Image (cartoon, rainbow, N blue to C red; front, top):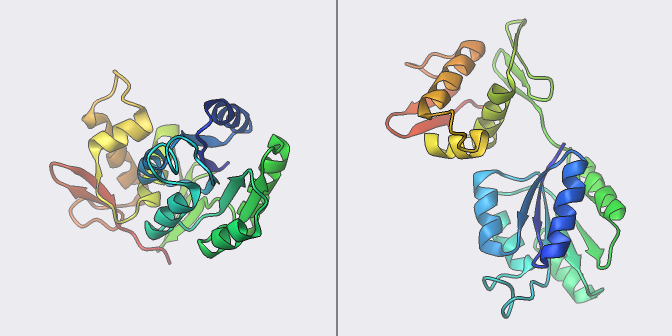
Length: 233
């Protein structure tokens, strides 16, 4: 299932979107303004973004950003997934501007949740969907099936190992502090510490056949956290 970023300033609408798409099995990132949305996308890259064009609190939104500006910044930061705009206006000018900024679709308010769901699914299908299989040398990672295959031998991933490995791969090349990994994967459960992260990384390295001293996959940033460094074939 997809990770969907919704940006909508009307709390009731946002809550409805969150409830519906969570029930559909998606992971929902729900934000009422641009800065909040960009911070969420920085922590966990979405697969698709659904942005309200007109954010009503303030001149252009709660923090001065409308949907077009949010899209522009997301694209500048490297987000290449589908973008769907929600708009109360059926303006050709708006649509032309949106498509120039990299929009994939427009949905006019009021809309049905089933229609929006269909449009999200169609946009993901057009862009290749949510990736789950990655190949690095003689290693294949199948995240949907919780399996690492190395030299023909399968290793099963636990739920946490799968979540951690997905997060590392999705943020390839970025230094990820242990605290960020705790927040994103373990939600700062009182029963876990930074050693929990280290233990799970150790387990992943064993299953990937990685060497901590000469890492091909997960590099230790001493005193900070970890970075995924493998390049896909």
